[in-house]
Image 1 (cartoon, each protein chain N blue to C red):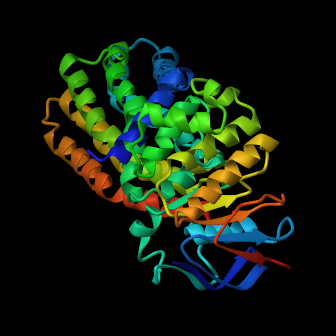
Image 2 (cartoon, rainbow over the protein chains, first blue to last red):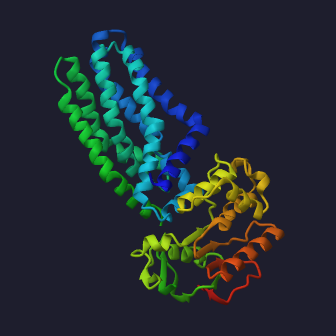
Length: 222
Length: 205
């Protein structure tokens, strides 16, 4: 594997490890937001399991988003982004390493926590399984699409909120197919079509998002 | 090898400079002088390709740097105002990461030797966050002892350094030039760097 690519991945993971509190913030956000609904709505398991797919997906989406503004902002501030742009390796390749690190740190833990949260919503086992699969297929797309937004708003004032405004509308297809997959399995239908579409969105994002992010970074750094 | 032809730089609606041209050959040193805000740093960023010139072109071995990006970037070391260090990584890790990013796989021993050369080996395992401004600058500059690139573009490399480090760095740059390298520097200090040919470029408003 490309050594500059591995270097970027290792650096970002090492940094996340040394700043564990940042990672914990994202996860606690996910846990707390998704725990508020059962508290606010009450313990009617019929209602809870009906709203569970949408609520959990929205919570996962927001949790992934709050960490987005950090994706390139620190690199921009300390000059490591400049050095990445000046690496002989193509920028989009290095960007994929950063996005992968972001997903491993912010996306994957949410996927792993989701079954526990699902229990709060009285979700049946097969629906929990589909929830995990849908998150596994969909969250990479969230990191990938989010990276474009993070790159575009780099250096802008109030970029945290700007990222949200820019990126949330783009998350809608992922949200719809992700939540529908779980709902479908709850009502006894096959979630396969929704999951396939979710996978397709992620694959498309893998191909296009790093290129768009690299282009956005070049504009932002000027 | 590196040539600038009629470069112009526009920031906002202010023209910082225009008609900047030079030709730098192997072993050549270029000083970029000018008061604060005259566009020295912008010129250096333009030469790296981080900034698109409003007019004119930067040529590496006769090709525009955008076209010859891979060969140009693998011959370029740029150090701007920002040190490019991660606060949470140690000096040694930072140095190795930056070298690897530039396509240069360095061992622990040679990275440590570079830190020793600029006199901060004892900070090697401290996180960059606890280092002083001058120490951070030296960690970033230690990369020059590892670099195998031909062209060094350094923005105020002597700023924030103590007298002894300035001398060590000047010697390193002279050595690089003596081996056929090229360097472009901005500086407000009077530092003796030996070169086969020295050019001066003054940016004025």
